[in-house]
Length: 306
Image (tube, rainbow, N blue to C red; front, side, top):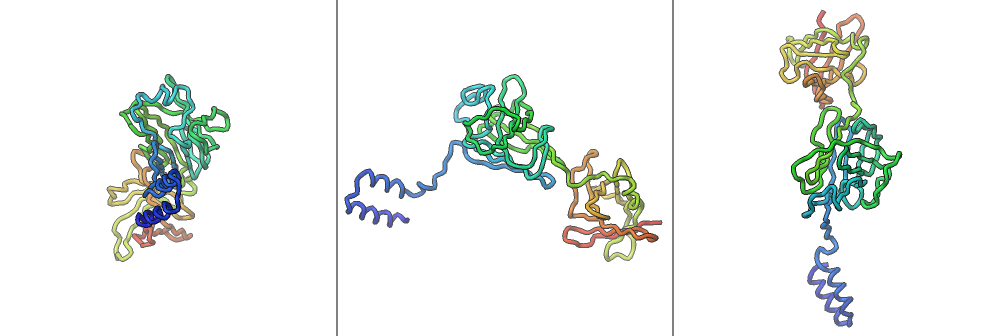
């Protein structure tokens, strides 16, 4: 309803002899933006992180300090309290796959997040399957909840309660919460979708030195050396590729592999589907392979040398 329509409507209401109380109510309801005001003392936030196809998400309301100091060990958050790190409704934790947090298994699903806050010992995170609870309805610790130990550290002042994922690896990372001068955190891991390990008998048909040639080349342009080391297939280009160096051939399917890149002996990136090796193993003939990009463009071919 526009302002001109509002005024016309009020004129009709006055002519009809509407009471003052009713008129005030109508004016309030018709004030522009009144019905859409959503300013909260603790605004809603959502933060998520995907690791190897596993998505972890937290949805929470973010209380501000608003001059309160300190926060923990006071009326705001008492020692020994079972407290949700947020406001309004309990903080919501969701994962689309089974994970491990603080070395504790967390099945996929939704959970309400509560912390047992302690002054002189480690805190505990309680993940409650009853995820829709008001923040003042503090549950008691019980066996139906998942109990996860938390690290507690001092930190720079954070005015607004904040969840984050400050570190990430190929198979996990760290979940942290900061508020006031306190930081609590726990490491998490996901189940890898691929492995750089392969039984030696399964790896043997692929081991060897392969001459490389581009799809339009008439001569070989280098070679790929495939070995079996440390329980899996390793490969390196000659001349050396400065980015890939020695990498893992990680099996994706029958005779299909992708490249896993190492940093200090740990896989930090998997080039699926950007670099896919498809081998052809024909009895009595040298093994061959094709390398294709994510759009199926042929990058180069390899043929095992005698």
